[in-house]
Length: 187
Image 1 (cartoon, rainbow, N blue to C red):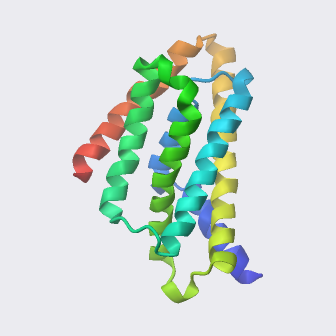
Image 2: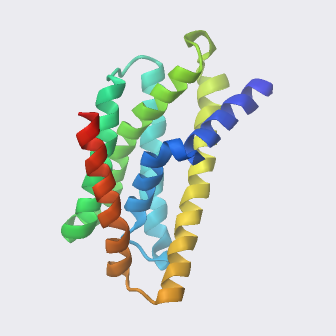
């Protein structure tokens, strides 16, 4: 049970840590176009992302997929930038957000696998005793982040009565700038 707890905590604190800012900003960008009343859409988008990153995390740990961590870091920044650009300029793509979110989840899962591989030795990695609790920890941390974002959006909307478009712009422009900066320095 200690091993389960250790890997769960590693996953949870990996995602809620300021070091995982790229993932937190991606989650912020992916929900920036929604109102709280659109919680079902948010749920579908996040579920698509979660399933995909869980799959690629497992495939990477099993050495079915191997990409350099440098390339994965660039691709993660690109997913954030694309999401912000879509938020701001391509409204016709919004209905496909579930598909984009799933595809981007595959990329983010590879980033999680790099973190997991760097924390533990190959002998410690096992689908049931390490991957499952690590991924469960990530998911719980992600729920905390998404809940915080949705509550923040709800309170922001109540306090400043900003419309969805303005809130989207206030989130997407700064996140886009950060993502473009990350792309530039990661190349």
